[in-house]
Length: 332
Ligand SMILES: [Zn+2]
Image 1 (spheres, protein in one colour):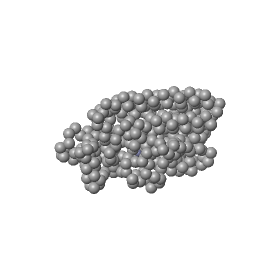
Image 2 (cartoon, helix red, strand yellow):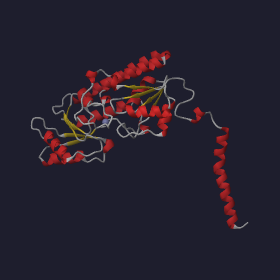
Image 3 (tube, rainbow, N blue to C red):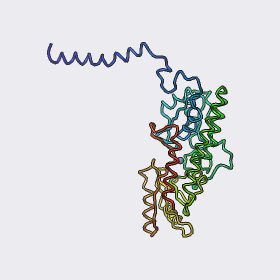
Image 4 (cartoon, helix red, strand yellow):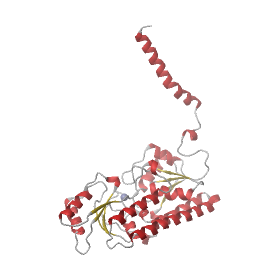
């Protein structure tokens, strides 16, 4: 055998070796559920999908071992999300789909439902079920959440622990209706989780209670509920659409608002998701040039995106505490 023949034969063996296991698996096959790790085959409880991370925490803490919860939006939050094939596959077998609504994530959920052919799936728009007097208007009156933005209300309801608790109770009621045999478990876990949310709120209020200066400029139009829950005053918004820099006119208005003698505002929130955005830095520079002292950028996470391996049941509490600590450190 020549060297070339030997190489050819080795190449054939290598190709066969690569294909044999595939062919073998294909013939023998596994039951489709086992081949699909998205939903555990042995679990008989409700299959719950949520749109993005805070809702995952709310649902998983109520679900306990009685229901399975899956999150579709991770590193891409609701502002920029478009569903992958995997997301549609998750939805195919789900019973419940919890979303915020208010034009933020509901159209994507409807699209996924349609794409999956799962006509039995119940989509629950949690924020739409909140009492109307609990909803706040945003600081900017432009549709910044896309063409399907329904009104000028701020949809970021999860940034208030009070609103979070109301949504936890809605999730509890849906799970009890879907799985009445485990109603007592859903009740007790929801109550225990709400106690933890109340603790987050109490800690935040304690951190901020002695602040004389409670004013800030938010990054995108997202802080109305956080502002209300923690007695802050959000004076203006840096960008109408996350990732888009303010135009010159908007920047001039921001400078005017921040340097208002009666209500000087020296704390500017920026978001870790948009670290490339320079608008916070640009405004800071302008304010410093105008002689303003102690201008501070504070990193505020709106909790719309998460690294998949960071999403644990206590993620919401951890992130809210981090936000509160960061804001408390910047305010005086
Ligand atoms: Zn947002």
